[in-house]
Length: 246
Ligand code: GLP
Image (cartoon, rainbow, N blue to C red; front, side, top):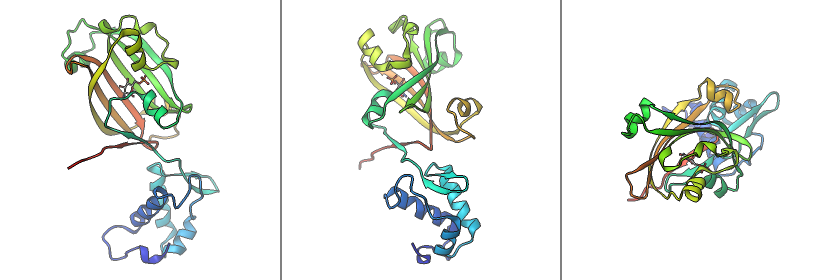
């Protein structure tokens, strides 16, 4: 690491350049997970920058989930974010298992609802159609990672509200108990900030960026809706991956 890596003529602010340099070294494995990063003073000396500039770079890395700070000890490299490929229609359980993590859930709500205007508008169903609203905190190795709210058309899965989803995969139950095969899903992703509810449920100290997805899942005919789901993932622990081909 040297001062030559920082360009003072560039229109890119110095703190940002330092942040990007550190990020690159974290991602390439130059720094190990939980390794202590150079202190503000050391960064200042290495790059010929002020401590304030170094602090800003570290603070932003912390905000993006690359670094965690320990009072009086310094900044350390955080666990790498979980990468979710947006290619296949998979369940949370499958996604976590693929990464060697133990999937889990804490059910907040599992009940029958009807007449929800948002569902009627979004899915074009009749107002009297019954849905099961299943809201869960999703865990990876016991750590709360996301909050998911799924709405299932109850006529395809009667008495779903009786099932204990604390230790059960929804997609597995749909398939094994109700013989439902999922065909495809449409999903949007947007950036949000955790609100009071999420901050509390996910056990985080302050508001953090979140990745919020909305999914409409269809049966194998490609047009019959079975599920509408809203999920919100901690963006400091989770990132999405898309392969683009030309
Ligand atoms: C994903 C989807 C949800 C779906 C869930 C099922 O996380 N975003 O729409 O309900 O998987 O997961 P599981 O089968 O683990 O309960």
